Image (cartoon, rainbow, N blue to C red; front, side, top):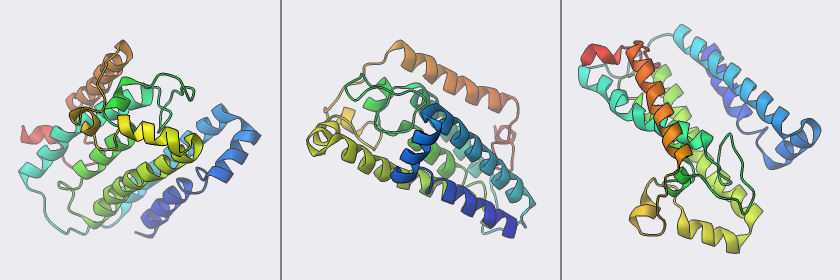
Length: 229
Protein backbone atom coordinates (compact mmCIF):
# COMPACT_ATOMS: atom_id res chain seq x y z
CA UNK A 1 0.00 0.00 0.00
CA UNK A 2 2.90 2.40 0.73
CA UNK A 3 4.25 2.06 -2.81
CA UNK A 4 0.78 2.78 -4.23
CA UNK A 5 0.28 5.88 -2.08
CA UNK A 6 3.74 7.16 -3.06
CA UNK A 7 2.86 6.67 -6.74
CA UNK A 8 -0.41 8.59 -6.31
CA UNK A 9 1.41 11.38 -4.48
CA UNK A 10 4.08 11.65 -7.18
CA UNK A 11 1.43 11.71 -9.90
CA UNK A 12 -0.46 14.52 -8.16
CA UNK A 13 2.73 16.54 -7.67
CA UNK A 14 3.58 16.12 -11.35
CA UNK A 15 0.17 17.55 -12.25
CA UNK A 16 0.41 20.49 -9.84
CA UNK A 17 4.00 21.79 -9.97
CA UNK A 18 5.10 21.64 -13.66
CA UNK A 19 1.75 23.02 -15.00
CA UNK A 20 1.85 25.97 -12.55
CA UNK A 21 2.11 29.12 -14.75
CA UNK A 22 5.51 30.38 -13.44
CA UNK A 23 7.11 26.91 -13.58
CA UNK A 24 5.53 26.07 -16.93
CA UNK A 25 6.61 29.36 -18.50
CA UNK A 26 10.19 28.90 -17.31
CA UNK A 27 10.37 25.30 -18.53
CA UNK A 28 8.96 26.24 -21.95
CA UNK A 29 11.44 29.10 -22.23
CA UNK A 30 14.26 26.72 -21.35
CA UNK A 31 13.22 23.66 -23.36
CA UNK A 32 10.78 24.91 -25.97
CA UNK A 33 7.06 24.12 -26.04
CA UNK A 34 7.31 20.88 -28.02
CA UNK A 35 10.11 19.41 -25.89
CA UNK A 36 8.31 20.45 -22.70
CA UNK A 37 5.07 18.77 -23.79
CA UNK A 38 6.91 15.64 -24.93
CA UNK A 39 8.85 15.28 -21.67
CA UNK A 40 5.80 16.06 -19.57
CA UNK A 41 3.72 13.47 -21.43
CA UNK A 42 6.50 10.91 -21.00
CA UNK A 43 6.73 11.65 -17.26
CA UNK A 44 2.96 11.37 -16.86
CA UNK A 45 2.95 8.04 -18.67
CA UNK A 46 5.74 6.65 -16.49
CA UNK A 47 3.96 7.75 -13.32
CA UNK A 48 0.70 6.22 -14.56
CA UNK A 49 2.48 2.92 -15.21
CA UNK A 50 3.94 3.09 -11.69
CA UNK A 51 0.44 3.63 -10.27
CA UNK A 52 -0.99 0.67 -12.18
CA UNK A 53 1.83 -1.68 -11.16
CA UNK A 54 1.63 -0.53 -7.51
CA UNK A 55 -2.17 -0.88 -7.51
CA UNK A 56 -1.94 -4.49 -8.66
CA UNK A 57 0.56 -5.25 -5.90
CA UNK A 58 -1.41 -3.52 -3.12
CA UNK A 59 -3.55 -5.58 -0.71
CA UNK A 60 -7.14 -6.17 -1.77
CA UNK A 61 -9.53 -4.67 0.79
CA UNK A 62 -13.17 -4.72 -0.35
CA UNK A 63 -15.67 -2.02 0.59
CA UNK A 64 -18.35 -3.77 -1.48
CA UNK A 65 -18.33 -6.93 -3.57
CA UNK A 66 -18.86 -6.93 -7.36
CA UNK A 67 -22.14 -8.03 -8.90
CA UNK A 68 -22.87 -8.52 -12.63
CA UNK A 69 -24.65 -5.19 -13.31
CA UNK A 70 -21.66 -3.18 -12.09
CA UNK A 71 -19.49 -4.51 -14.93
CA UNK A 72 -21.95 -3.05 -17.43
CA UNK A 73 -21.32 0.52 -16.22
CA UNK A 74 -17.93 0.93 -17.96
CA UNK A 75 -19.18 -1.02 -20.99
CA UNK A 76 -21.89 1.63 -21.46
CA UNK A 77 -19.87 4.68 -20.39
CA UNK A 78 -16.49 4.05 -21.99
CA UNK A 79 -17.54 4.73 -25.61
CA UNK A 80 -18.39 8.27 -24.51
CA UNK A 81 -15.06 8.59 -22.68
CA UNK A 82 -13.10 7.43 -25.73
CA UNK A 83 -15.14 9.77 -27.93
CA UNK A 84 -14.48 12.86 -25.82
CA UNK A 85 -10.78 12.05 -25.41
CA UNK A 86 -10.17 11.16 -29.06
CA UNK A 87 -12.07 14.08 -30.56
CA UNK A 88 -10.76 16.45 -27.88
CA UNK A 89 -7.08 15.68 -28.34
CA UNK A 90 -7.32 16.17 -32.11
CA UNK A 91 -9.32 19.42 -32.01
CA UNK A 92 -8.00 22.95 -31.96
CA UNK A 93 -8.76 24.27 -28.50
CA UNK A 94 -7.39 27.39 -26.87
CA UNK A 95 -9.28 26.70 -23.65
CA UNK A 96 -8.12 23.24 -22.59
CA UNK A 97 -5.95 20.15 -23.21
CA UNK A 98 -5.25 19.24 -26.83
CA UNK A 99 -2.53 18.00 -29.15
CA UNK A 100 -3.31 20.91 -31.47
CA UNK A 101 -3.24 24.62 -30.80
CA UNK A 102 -5.03 27.51 -32.47
CA UNK A 103 -4.19 31.17 -32.23
CA UNK A 104 -6.19 33.43 -30.00
CA UNK A 105 -8.44 34.28 -32.94
CA UNK A 106 -8.20 30.91 -34.67
CA UNK A 107 -11.13 28.59 -35.30
CA UNK A 108 -11.94 26.07 -32.60
CA UNK A 109 -12.64 22.37 -33.04
CA UNK A 110 -16.26 21.26 -33.30
CA UNK A 111 -16.05 19.35 -30.01
CA UNK A 112 -15.59 22.64 -28.10
CA UNK A 113 -19.19 23.50 -28.92
CA UNK A 114 -20.20 20.50 -26.81
CA UNK A 115 -17.77 21.25 -23.96
CA UNK A 116 -14.65 23.37 -23.77
CA UNK A 117 -12.90 20.62 -21.77
CA UNK A 118 -13.59 17.46 -23.80
CA UNK A 119 -10.46 15.56 -22.74
CA UNK A 120 -11.06 16.21 -19.04
CA UNK A 121 -14.72 15.24 -19.43
CA UNK A 122 -13.58 12.01 -21.06
CA UNK A 123 -11.20 11.21 -18.21
CA UNK A 124 -13.90 12.07 -15.68
CA UNK A 125 -16.30 9.61 -17.33
CA UNK A 126 -13.51 6.99 -17.50
CA UNK A 127 -12.70 7.29 -13.81
CA UNK A 128 -16.28 7.40 -12.50
CA UNK A 129 -17.33 4.47 -14.70
CA UNK A 130 -14.69 2.23 -13.13
CA UNK A 131 -15.70 2.83 -9.52
CA UNK A 132 -18.89 0.66 -9.33
CA UNK A 133 -17.26 -2.62 -10.48
CA UNK A 134 -14.21 -2.05 -8.26
CA UNK A 135 -15.27 -2.00 -4.64
CA UNK A 136 -11.80 -2.18 -3.09
CA UNK A 137 -9.95 0.61 -1.34
CA UNK A 138 -7.10 0.89 -3.87
CA UNK A 139 -9.47 1.20 -6.83
CA UNK A 140 -11.55 3.80 -5.04
CA UNK A 141 -8.44 5.89 -4.34
CA UNK A 142 -7.13 5.40 -7.88
CA UNK A 143 -10.27 6.12 -9.88
CA UNK A 144 -11.68 8.61 -7.40
CA UNK A 145 -8.39 10.51 -7.41
CA UNK A 146 -8.23 10.55 -11.22
CA UNK A 147 -11.80 11.79 -11.39
CA UNK A 148 -11.12 14.50 -8.84
CA UNK A 149 -8.01 15.58 -10.75
CA UNK A 150 -10.04 15.90 -13.97
CA UNK A 151 -12.81 17.79 -12.19
CA UNK A 152 -10.46 20.23 -10.47
CA UNK A 153 -8.55 20.77 -13.72
CA UNK A 154 -11.57 22.40 -15.39
CA UNK A 155 -11.80 25.54 -13.21
CA UNK A 156 -8.00 25.74 -13.10
CA UNK A 157 -7.80 25.87 -16.91
CA UNK A 158 -10.75 28.28 -17.03
CA UNK A 159 -8.97 30.62 -14.63
CA UNK A 160 -5.80 30.45 -16.71
CA UNK A 161 -7.73 31.19 -19.91
CA UNK A 162 -9.58 34.09 -18.32
CA UNK A 163 -6.30 35.60 -17.16
CA UNK A 164 -4.85 35.25 -20.65
CA UNK A 165 -7.85 36.55 -22.60
CA UNK A 166 -9.12 39.22 -20.22
CA UNK A 167 -12.57 39.60 -18.68
CA UNK A 168 -14.30 40.97 -21.78
CA UNK A 169 -13.28 38.19 -24.14
CA UNK A 170 -13.73 35.59 -21.43
CA UNK A 171 -17.36 36.71 -21.01
CA UNK A 172 -17.84 36.16 -24.76
CA UNK A 173 -16.29 32.69 -24.47
CA UNK A 174 -18.62 31.71 -21.61
CA UNK A 175 -21.60 32.97 -23.61
CA UNK A 176 -20.83 30.49 -26.40
CA UNK A 177 -19.34 27.50 -24.57
CA UNK A 178 -19.97 25.42 -21.48
CA UNK A 179 -18.17 23.03 -19.16
CA UNK A 180 -21.17 20.70 -18.85
CA UNK A 181 -21.47 18.76 -22.13
CA UNK A 182 -24.22 19.98 -24.51
CA UNK A 183 -25.38 22.71 -22.09
CA UNK A 184 -24.49 25.58 -24.45
CA UNK A 185 -26.05 23.77 -27.42
CA UNK A 186 -29.29 22.92 -25.59
CA UNK A 187 -29.45 26.49 -24.29
CA UNK A 188 -29.25 27.83 -27.84
CA UNK A 189 -25.99 29.68 -27.16
CA UNK A 190 -24.03 27.82 -29.83
CA UNK A 191 -24.46 25.24 -32.58
CA UNK A 192 -22.53 22.09 -33.41
CA UNK A 193 -20.87 22.41 -36.80
CA UNK A 194 -19.24 19.02 -37.20
CA UNK A 195 -16.34 19.03 -39.64
CA UNK A 196 -14.38 16.17 -41.17
CA UNK A 197 -11.77 16.21 -38.39
CA UNK A 198 -14.51 15.87 -35.77
CA UNK A 199 -16.07 12.81 -37.45
CA UNK A 200 -12.69 11.23 -38.17
CA UNK A 201 -11.43 11.38 -34.60
CA UNK A 202 -14.81 10.55 -33.14
CA UNK A 203 -14.81 7.36 -35.20
CA UNK A 204 -11.19 6.60 -34.31
CA UNK A 205 -11.94 7.05 -30.60
CA UNK A 206 -14.94 4.73 -30.76
CA UNK A 207 -13.02 2.24 -32.92
CA UNK A 208 -10.26 2.16 -30.29
CA UNK A 209 -12.82 1.27 -27.65
CA UNK A 210 -14.31 -1.49 -29.77
CA UNK A 211 -10.83 -2.90 -30.40
CA UNK A 212 -10.04 -2.96 -26.69
CA UNK A 213 -13.37 -4.61 -25.94
CA UNK A 214 -12.99 -7.26 -28.63
CA UNK A 215 -9.47 -8.04 -27.45
CA UNK A 216 -10.88 -8.79 -24.01
CA UNK A 217 -8.94 -5.89 -22.50
CA UNK A 218 -9.94 -5.50 -18.88
CA UNK A 219 -9.61 -1.69 -18.80
CA UNK A 220 -8.37 -1.85 -15.20
CA UNK A 221 -11.74 -2.93 -13.80
CA UNK A 222 -10.56 -6.34 -12.67
CA UNK A 223 -13.20 -8.31 -14.61
CA UNK A 224 -13.84 -9.00 -18.25
CA UNK A 225 -16.88 -6.90 -19.29
CA UNK A 226 -17.68 -9.38 -22.06
CA UNK A 227 -18.32 -12.01 -19.43
CA UNK A 228 -21.58 -10.29 -18.55
CA UNK A 229 -22.86 -9.80 -22.10
